[in-house]
View: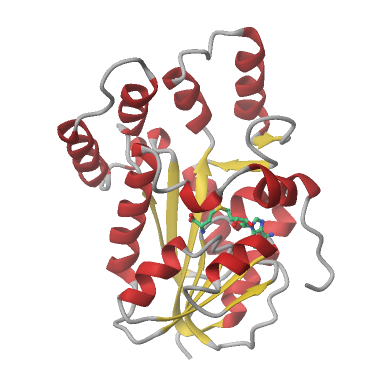
Length: 270
Ligand SMILES: C[S@@+](CC[C@H](N)C(=O)[O-])C[C@H]1O[C@@H](n2cnc3c(N)ncnc32)[C@H](O)[C@@H]1O
């Protein structure tokens, strides 16, 4: 990795605290995120075989289905234990989104499904997007995920503790500043508004930029059913919430209720 340094709390969180491999498999809203990310990306990916660079790819959860779909995937992540796990899925190297070692114009697709929400400084996010644009071929696809500025407001209602002073203050701070300091619970993070994410992709030179709500406006109902005592979310509740995510796509006002966003754009053709 060259002249960039990962925030120590991000390295600690992914290197020691959390098991990233189970994040999208062990909860209902995680599974919604995985399925919707898959279906949205498949809408924009070129036909396989094409070269996909998965930056911030974690343990390879998306690389896995992309390889199964016939793509030639390489994964980059700053956390050595992620890279070690992902190496079972595809070629994987330690690296940072802000200073990629891959050659210019060398991939058909670059996806950043994680780095942007761990880079609170705009200049760092701009570097990460500039690197994606450099590495993707002319006319190629860049896809970037972000966490919604308002996600924690919904999330802490599902835990039924938003009204507790300490949580109330912490969420208020995120709403005001868009940054979580990573002191406890989650790690150093940045929370986007949908229009801000679109503007960052446009500024990086990408064309045809679109932003989607990944889980859509009803994910927190599913999460609440999972968190609160009882039998958990029924398959019908999950199916309805997934339907809501798809039905909400034409209505940008509803983006504000999703947990994550997926933005896509294309580099100009040569
Ligand atoms: C929540 S995980 C997402 C993993 C996977 N892409 C997914 O969508 O499930 C965030 C990932 O971003 C990685 N990450 C954080 N900062 C990064 C940076 N500056 N450059 C590249 N990856 C970064 C973390 O190591 C972690 O693997």
